[in-house]
Length: 361
Image 1 (cartoon, rainbow, N blue to C red):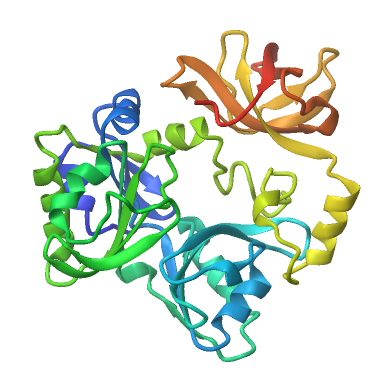
Image 2: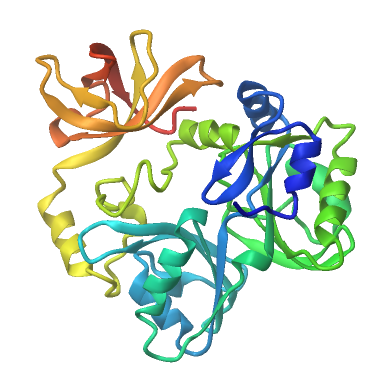
């Protein structure tokens, strides 16, 4: 099991630790509900250094990205990022990812899920027939996500970069807490605002930045946050989690990701997805809330009133913000309309739920 440069910090703070994507990661500190509320209302710090980062360089870097991702990366200019996915040859998704344009048409950073680093690297490499320079910098890159409505206000005194006014899906590079070459982006996955900071741990820089953040946020009540709250926060926003809501068998169109599936250029299996868009999908990812007491979990069956299976749950939790059980799941298209009545099979009991609009909050 791998450690991040912050593992000993988590342990010293009393975090509940567990294996996640091969890393020893903090699941919670003070409790998921408390940490969730901290991020929604104030500011919290996530160690997400387990995520993967690839650098693609050269005159054919953009061409390679265009061929392997669904979104149109040609729209990116320096300092801008986009959400995208890697489609496979079977109508599914290899992974979802972020594409950062560091230098237009020349240098890009791809941020991928921790559990898919090797898989994604091999997949992208298999299309690299034009000598694009590729670097897997995952092991030497630290990543902290400081999320919440007060996050940028707390962090601004630590840098000359204007992070208070950083627009969503843009980034900047500069000196942060005395450390040079820090990339600060506004691409968070909590829906609560804030930034993510990427940097290398050189000469104790990881400790320096961690300590500076918590010193700067001490009076404001900033807290460390575990992966448990990260999941409840992203679920309240209806954001997909790879391995739960999207995987090698789910189409981006089925998952409601048509907005990142651009047919203005060819990409892997694009003709299949274009036909799927024209013909329409047979199942759709929907948000639902429980109308009866019970929490839906991954892989619970979704049924209709007669008990016929119409889909399955991909994610579910008790929403700390709403005080009710919510979830995501794929259902037959005819049950995907808002307010459709569905039933979740929990311990052989059918519990009523209804399809609702996402985000939930």
